Length: 85
Image (cartoon, rainbow, N blue to C red):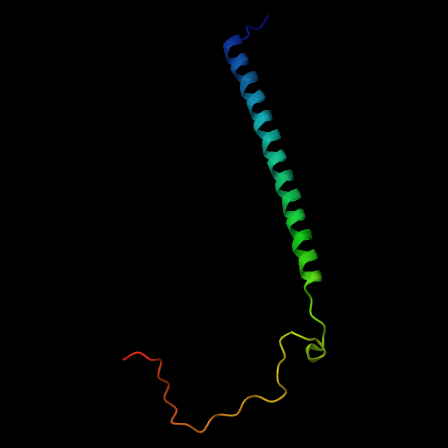
């Protein structure tokens, strides 16, 4: 009849129990992270859909209008003075 080492068996059982608890906690944290990222992605996607601009901004009032031609260079001295001495 084999002799069993009961203190070692008890420690192994407690270690396995601890590993299972940590594993469960790790999976729960991972699932919570996936759920949070899905919520954030949904919120950002909704916000992006709500703030899209029409393809023709010159038809909107109060929006930013980009001119058809770029501004021409001015005929000045070319020096800018910020007011500092």
